[in-house]
Length: 316
Image 1 (cartoon, rainbow, N blue to C red):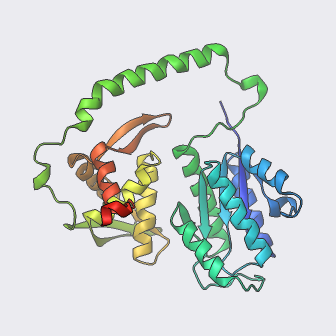
Image 2 (tube, rainbow, N blue to C red):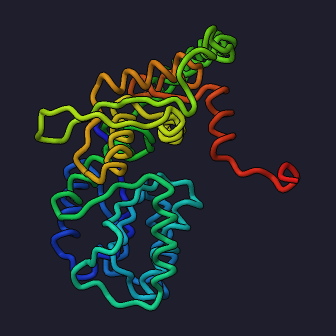
Image 3 (tube, helix red, strand yellow):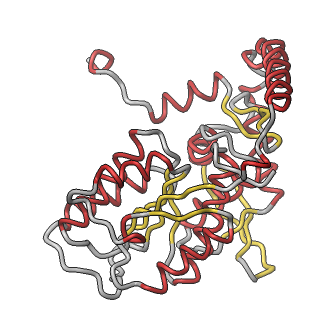
């Protein structure tokens, strides 16, 4: 059954007509209905209830702020739309141009510090980089596809193709069976694997192989297991497929080597998966798309120790 999704585009395209057209075209190719203030010519003044309703009815939210600081009024709208989307728990992905690269026609602004802070906030979540219109189109296509796979939304279908009561009853039975199996495996998940202490981890080095799109040569990058775990663990919160995890690790490697074309090899992805599974930090879990990477109790504990904020009492 083919689903359609509504995607809210929070953007600062200004005069970037080709970029706006590329984003709309990429979303339409994915059976997504793009909506947004710039797409409909709306402003926040007096129209916020309509804007908030669009966000509430959307399945996903894309934030494309451009690279140059927008006007103060436009930045207010971007920040408000992002805050509304996160408050409603909408899956959000940002598409960022490199810092310092001016977007044609970008409006002058006295809010540079606010804009930098807003970009920094976006970089802490799911984000993709782009420089050209073609890269933006590809990033939106791949990024939105990833969101749909990793964060399945309700979406909508034609009335004649909607699920029947029998369909929902069968789904409920399957869900109950999955829960029974998960309870049976709970003890195994909590158990720490034998010999884990002898495995490479933490600050131990790891070599990852990758290639560049259009280039058959294989390159090698070095990192520590802690660095790789932090990237993989933050992504595992979203229950990604192996393809999603490969995309995330490739993007991270690309940031280390200043390249947008990095692709982690299948062998290196298997190495990462085997190591974290052997250490008892990750596991696979059934999702509608098949199997997803997920953190174990030990993995969640380690992630909390690495990135969690400590209370004032624990610091004294």
